[in-house]
Image 1 (cartoon, rainbow, N blue to C red):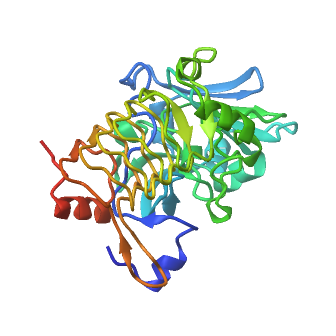
Image 2: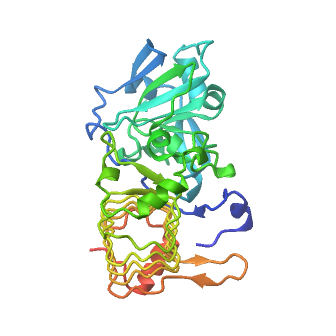
Image 3: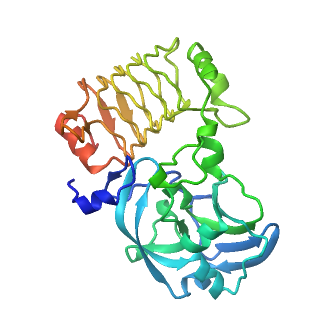
Length: 358
């Protein structure tokens, strides 16, 4: 898909333009289907309730249109997305909720079994946060946050919480779900490319010890959640075991790694760089590959079934020379039910004959 120079100037660093609206994160709320007659939006100051409101009350307030560009941390951007709803500041005013003088942050909580939440400084929230119930003039679909979601245009989209349940004013900040469990940056400014918090990157000593392990079970469950390895140097790595299923290895460098036959089922490899990596016969079924770069990789016989592929790249084009770098091998590569694959990459894989839709 071609873009003009004006559109290009609207893309933050290392973002790819799409006309799709990819589903990211969870696809269903807790318990999976929200019943409007039971839905309530709670507004709290610390531990004190300031009110509880039905969807009818929220929906009947005068709506405004938000026409904005949205930028996902995985690397895709959509320009001129159209939402309908209200600014947070307008909503509070119409509901006659006064912002407490002690409030320095606002926390937003979702109807979510995993406790999804996020936070913003109070000034950012009042200036830039919207509560929206419609997209392109139609009610937001369940996978995008029905009946009400947060949209914060100036931040990566993980700050735009789905299935909004609670707004809470806080004196002290609390890290949100993605920030505390995956190392995402708490400020999330796409123009500063604040994707990950550098203070939480895995240290070199731990990474070297990790690479020498022959059993990774200890990393699959730490206090009930897997331990996340962030921005590790796995270049040239040849694991002692092929069983790497379910590991959380985010924003890691796998260039020229020897990963033949590796079991990556259900692994989270977001933002991984696989230039020159050998993934021949690897099983990536159900893996989270959002933002991964496989250009220059060997995927011969690899299995990519039901993977999350928002902004994943299987080819790249050098901006200076215009030369394309694609997969080195792809014979017998299998791909079914790709989730979030962007237009240009989808077209490339179809040309190679490896993308199957059955």
